[in-house]
Length: 164
Image (tube, rainbow, N blue to C red; front, side):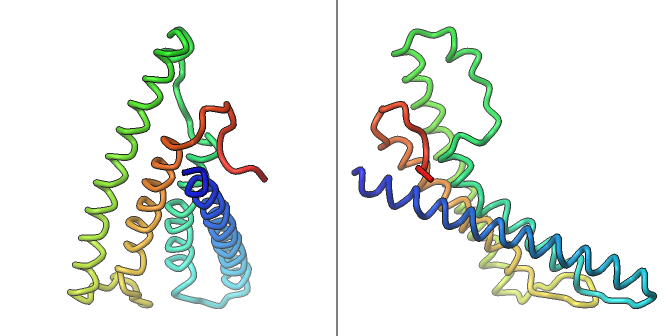
């Protein structure tokens, strides 16, 4: 079991690195676009490409955010519960998060497949395929669901997430 947890932690770190590179690429392209347009030139692809990169990075970084407890959480109730009650609440919240991720992975997969099957494209001049944007949802949330499973399997040592 701990092998799966370690593997998921490593995969989450890898996804976070990929997400960081995608965000950096989006920032560089937007900066270049502003400078390029300030010089009087015009382009048509950079903003949409940057949006694709930012959306994909959000979903890819999600497992790492969960593993490192980097999300925003309200732990007021858990703080006032006895240790056993707080653990039970943690498991319940984790199972609910897992169910939501599995549902959104399934729905995102359907959305991606339908967009691919229909050949849907964006309405811009560049007109990339929409499934390229949509695929980040089932991939990222599917990996987040696996990270939720890893969190359920994680030994209760008080250590959270991947060790850098």
